[in-house]
Image (cartoon, rainbow, N blue to C red; front, top):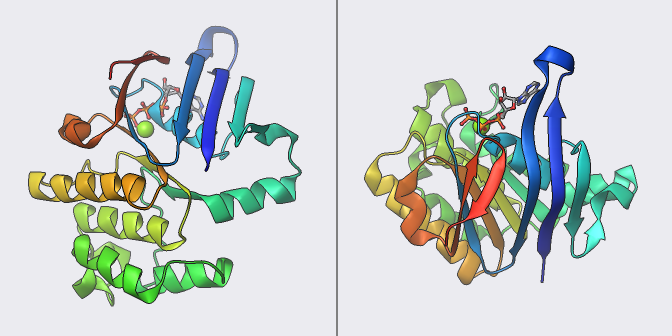
Length: 224
Ligand SMILES: Nc1ncnc2c1ncn2[C@@H]1O[C@H](COP(=O)(O)OP(=O)(O)OP(=O)(O)O)[C@@H](O)[C@H]1O
Ligand SMILES: [Mg+2]
């Protein structure tokens, strides 16, 4: 069972007058089977926390642990494999490849990670649930913000990660879609026994979460 933990994480950017203390003494843990929601206003440190949790950037101090092992202690190659095989990201900017169709965004995952991606049946059900079946031959610039967001969620799930990290995955979605994504994330956690962590200011997701945290000025508090 996968667990991901942050111990006493601090993150500062810049120095002197321009120094920003983005995260202060963050302790947080997530495990397979849980949907954790971290709510916070703009600039509170959400993206910084999520990218540190997934090993995309390093903290100024403190430890990030996966299955009780410090990821800083792993070799670069091991860290990269971990990111590729265990962690799915839905980044705030969606990060779709501009010159590839929606269908080819998934083909690209197969090229980078040829094994252990989700089955054809599971893929069909994910794209149906997210309502993106008819978008397969479109390019990212032809998609609305909400459509791009749903493709980015499907792409993250495609690689069959044990941990799904999502940054504002519902900001561009209407309420019906938010309900579907909330339900999907809950199912991914519960039925598929993965860990899901979402950072957002979208309180519409609250009812689907197991644990809720608030992040204010880089400090985290558990509220549920
Ligand atoms: N690379 C960086 N260099 C300097 N400052 C940064 C950098 N990344 C983030 N910050 C600062 O750290 C703080 C937290 O930023 P972060 O992007 O994590 O906030 P956020 O909660 O994700 O905001 P938003 O809701 O607008 O996406 C902000 O004050 C931001 O300006
Ligand atoms: Mg952000």
